Length: 124
Image 1 (spheres, one colour):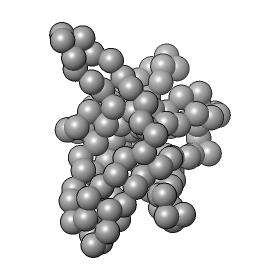
Image 2: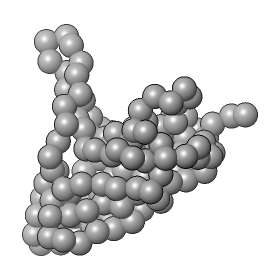
Image 3: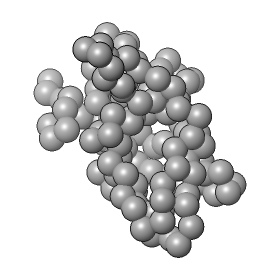
């Protein structure tokens, strides 16, 4: 699994944060992302934003399957990580380590850059 463009949208005030990444399955078999963990947050989960009949809602996902030789861009599909209840104050201009756990028992720890939007770091 190749993981690129991993970032967290930082918001002030202790509200839940969202994490995004681009995952590419370079194998010949489907890969299933089953959970995420981090020492920085008490609660992390997989979510998808759904637009239905003029309303927007978030729905938790139990797993995300990525077909062989396919790229999944979390942000473009409305898929994201929900990052809640930080264990401690972290640097909004820094990075956070998040471990992605796959159904086959493997895991991959990824450095997520913290930003205020897709292309900018927070300002003082």
